[in-house]
Length: 199
Image (cartoon, rainbow, N blue to C red; front, top):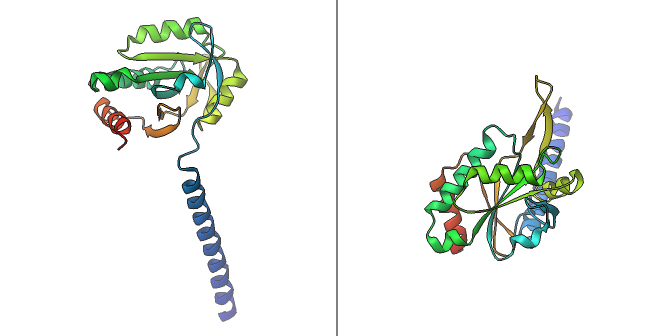
């Protein structure tokens, strides 16, 4: 019985050592990069049908959001919240902000569909709509650690399950912070303002 307890103790200590080593390795990686591994190159098509890449993030603060035009609530709600947040920012900060909406449903979201959808949102902030072929969309989503998947519905059609976070990127196109789903426009505005101020 005593031998079993000793063996169990040794196993637990070994497991603890592995966990501690993994923790410190993760801390070292985080410190060495200086930022989360979110964002990166992408090559898509904008709502006018023109090629677009990650250079469009340079020189702006960008709220990058992945969604789809047939989304019943999360996507339009998030876009409206971002628009309201922009309306609460001082003029100088509002002018440097753009919303980048990336469709994860390229099968239905052609540039024309995307343009009509974003125009209908009537947002008081610059909005860039992006779509593309399935592989480039998948690559962009992967760069931003975004999950999405097609989900059949009873009518025989489909919807899309997807991540709901908004990624705030700085003027260099680098990740700044997450604007979590469910934030109020005031909370979003405060986070954006703090990020621009370097807080």
